[in-house]
Image (cartoon, rainbow over all chains, first blue to last red):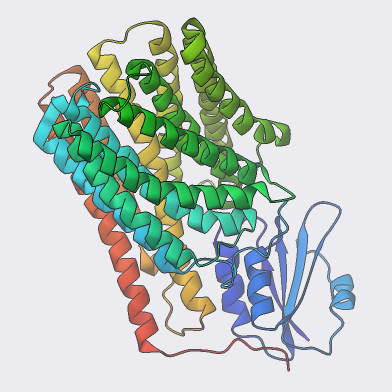
Length: 88
Length: 429
């Protein structure tokens, strides 16, 4: 699957949401959004739920949130998240 | 940490709820500017009807409108509370508040007992149900953030403020002679300026400063305790005024000190932003916190000495500058965001980007107008009182500026909705 990355850790509100929505609009079955954020992006996740997008969010030991969103229902998001490494 | 679903179309109020309050607040601001332009220095005399009118144009008109609009938006976002039928609730509060405020202003001017009565009735009808409903929902929340807890205390202070206002109106209208109006006025000031306006802004800042500007968070126990401490002190002040008047200045000064400390801490937080470049909203916050800290210092001095007219007018100006700075900071963030978010979430292709709703340069120009107004007012307090007329003109211009921005955002929103071209988010199959 093609990864669309977004490191929002240093972005001021509402830039993370703005950029994430722009990516979400372009996703297809073969692509996913992988996002890093310093907070759980609740508005984005609510939007994903409303539009029935497959999504998962987890907080790591350093307090960084890892978020995956895709229209693809067959992919195991937990496994996909495990394989992701934190971008530099 | 709040466990709500955040800002979703289900929970967030329609954009019209927020914009109607913001636009109303701007129009009240234009009225306040016009009043100051016409009345000049007499509008700064707190004992005179002209002074009461200006103060309540700013507090009941401007600040209440913006703060209620912000609460309708912030309760879902910061506390996960979705108010049932927010449009009806907003309309049922806004119209009685509008007419109640107008009648109160007329009552100040005429001294008419009938007008005082009608004003109190309408303001009560407008304020009490909405404040009570919001407070009830906050009270029932199981897990509070510092912001949601603080909003609850601010609303509690608003309710006390309204009840105290009724008592004062009863005294002014001659229906009771129980109570010392001057003493009650002091408590009314403290509750209104520290317990309601400042405390709501403080509470919202706990999350908004970090979220908007990527700053380190406020210390957790500090944020948890500050609103309850301020509220406790103001409640104690109410008791002291009735039973132990000598304690009143000490108690009120403590509350002012706590608010002043928060202003300084917020300035420190803003200096720790990750991004070196500051937009207009950062500067509005900086001006707001700087003027608040200075105002609180003057407030404490004024609690133990009699301030000269110049110092009193300086305190008034600085406090107004704080409140309006934060209002503008929040409006320039909230209005573009809501316009963009609601249209995007509804799936419109041609939803404008946030900088297309209100361009950052527009906000920077407003910053210049705002600073010019502030310095003109300070100059008026210390040199030529006739400059208050100019201050009024600048204040009018400042609010016309933001009113135009809000109106244009609303117009753009309706335009995009009317164009009807939507995209579909790729959804699960």
